Length: 424
Image 1: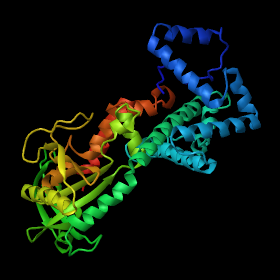
Image 2 (image 1 turned 45 degrees about the horizontal axis):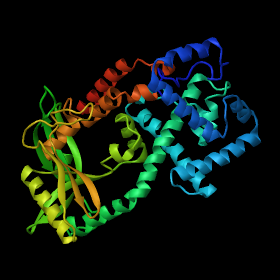
Image 3 (image 1 turned 30 degrees about the vertical axis):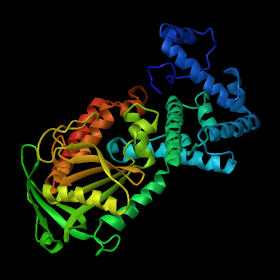
Image 4 (image 1 turned 90 degrees about the vertical axis):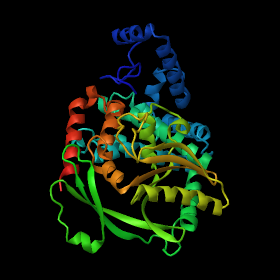
């Protein structure tokens, strides 16, 4: 994928004569790097194996001969179906390939919709690549002189993203994450939330907060009903934030709690693999199931955690809390994630119960408002930092192809999100 690597997309497809000036320069570039030479041979062999060929010269025949290409596609589908455990049914394999292509497109669309929204037109994918879903078709586009450099890069990028999507799908099928997610929701409804409330029944409340002018951290917060909120017009430095709360019952007392279930979509998982520079979702995506909760006070947080472990016992499962990080009452948050702030306050842990490992992030009203609004802490700013500072933007939209000044765009987007956060 890297534009400074042995497979960089050039102005012309990589089918130059073996003794041409371009090929000699390319060989000289990788000659002294044994790792690059090994990687090149590995990827070259994968290309040949997938296409069912033995030399680059045979690629031109596949590009221009429809019958030959159709046989190569049929063969490649079977190879990929067995590789990712999809099966041998042609219809099932094609269905999965369409899903992987859609996920690859969603990765780019998600960045165009938010983090890079003002530059959406600059990074729009070529129409012919958006509609393509067949790996052989995308691979052959890399060697087809009819395609522009940008389109050929986007074909390669889509292939790479489809590969990550396929790895994620394979792991989800192996770990049965969809079934576990439903089990998790059943557990919450049956044992955690108050029995007096119907499934989906919520209390509408608003957090009326004032913020420090220096860093826009929360200074005071008051919980208002719907009627009370109607009479409030936030001034500069104030915010009115909607929360829809459930309740849990602890020792006969109903305690309000705002909850949002966190289940990463495939495109988000692909982006996480890219941020961590990983290809194995088992090592990089450890927060597939998650829950973020907001309570009125630290004492309510403690009562909720205790209620969770008791609820698990009532569901006939022991619950252990792993990788606990608690900065709600002070201290600095230590994260290995690029772009995250040490000023982030939260209680974070993984709960292992019922055959699942679920990530919990728990806030008080004040820390939740800081998570949304505080400078250098707000999640919208964090999204921009992590996608730029991990090199993902440069990886997906290399400046030599998209003609973008990424450092300037990063600063512009941080300023834009900060302005949007603080305005009423």
